[in-house]
Amino acid sequence: MPRTPIICGNWKMHKSPNEAVAFVNELAPRVAGYDSVERVLAPTFLALAAVAVAAHGAPLQVAAQDGHWAPQGAYTSQVSAEMLRPYVNYVIIGHSECRAFLNETDVNVNRKAKAILAAGLRPIIAVGESLEQNQAGETVDFVQSQVKAALAGVSARDMANVVIAYEPIWAIGTGLSASGSMADAIIKSAVRDTIAALYDDAVASSIRIQYGGSVKPGNMEEFMSQPNIDGALVGGASLQVDDFTALIEIAARVKG
Ligand code: PGA
Image (tube, rainbow, N blue to C red; front, side, top):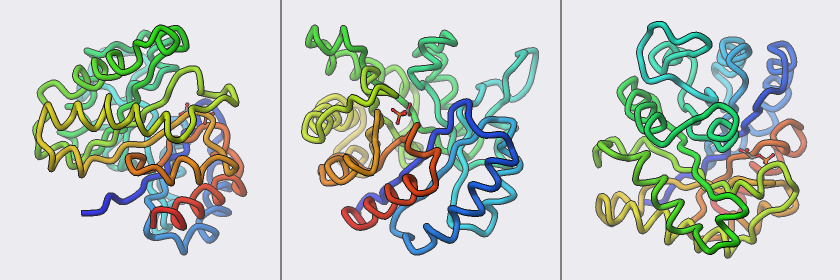
């Protein structure tokens, strides 16, 4: 079965609820023709409910930027996967910024993945190596270990709802990106082949794997032309309607 490409705009700590709704209203008609691509936006928690309302009936899905594993409880600042259920389809977890600034660990990414799946939602699990690891030749081993840890205890059946985002940390927000073929090779050996070993070839060939890290209209075609890359997790270029529309158009043209 062909894998449906998925382009997710990760807005990080950008856009008020009003700005987010205005963006959705402008974007929706412009990307309406590209149904071969899943089009997803990840606003801040504060804008999530407003974006969910604005996106209702539009060809857009909504993602949260995190989701706690406990259904509720004494976890100041957190929002649970269970609470997100009415608002989102996807939940991004394990983003390198959360790993770096918020002490996100592999153990917690795994807890979150299982809770998100149990809530009937889909985790987008971000993995990726640092510049030092990349230069030391540790990329494949490290990314493999992140993938294994994130998926511990996740059933083969639930894997149909999992998306992995490979984002080399040195390429995020820096303007540097991996080359398409380099990213494809890492995605194949560190992610898809690891999933084949953990599950089987059917799971490995159906799971969707995004590339992320300074994706923009000028390099999108290079990434989308790769056989193992099924979409993109996009920060900076998802903040402008023109750029995000262009990314979706390119994904539809190359992959759709
Ligand atoms: P970037 O961010 O596109 O701005 O590099 C990607 C991400 O962090 O998901």
